[in-house]
Length: 393
Image (tube, rainbow, N blue to C red; front, side, top):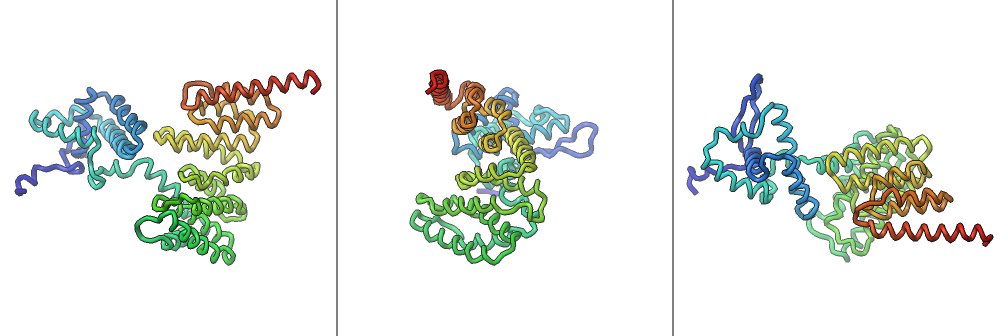
């Protein structure tokens, strides 16, 4: 390839042009990613930002294997639009000085890079690298460690060294890994202070979660160990730790929201049922804030997890007045969280509330038919119970 030909190749993060908005002294730097985004917006979506957003939202929802790329493009779209708005510029300002032939060639590349999402990881723009998903997950895993009396970072490094540097653990090799991790914990648990035990367990919960993608845990041995450590962690005496309670709870709740291998399932009921009265409003506030924030960022799976946890909090703390509005927010997208609240109300003799939970969630959704069946079963069961009361049986 000649030097002249190499100069003609442009990469996404190369500078396309600088535009000086009127009344300012700071130019807006426009990259080729910005140019390609603008061309796709103008030519494929007739300049309609919302239509373009919806296209990539649909890609994210309908094609899970493309979710990461779609989220990256969406984040670039949002932040590029914000940059234009702050500069008082429209998309036409980026296209006006270019020749038709140049735009035609760049449009072909724009379709491939943006619309079809065919690009290498190394080509991504900073806005595509630093997405809300990656930033929130990083915060959930390690973002609050500086607030611990003893940082989990030292134990995290030692735990990481228990794993091989790269490669894959087969299902049979998972037994050896589990023994290695168990031995690591056992050697330290009995001879550390409470603050050091908090750090040890917290490091374990992050490192093992981060490494699960390299383990075939079909036998569930590593997952079972994770569940045991998490159950132990939530039962440690938080009040005795020299750390602000709100940060401790924020860190724990974000970890649960982002840990997606099921390792916290057995420990969540222990956590919610064991909250002290003064901790309940704080946990509720954190969960509501997480739900709102994650919804706004369109991190749908994690937002749903925060909402599910709100339902668990209300269920285990018998906060019956929250059941109906929470069921209404949940809808029929998932079923276990609805049946759990209804069953809790029924167990405590709140029969009208048990029915109202199903009625509040009623509407289109993945599990609408199943929840309607459960509702009818409950109505039939309660009718039989009331008939028995009337007849004295």
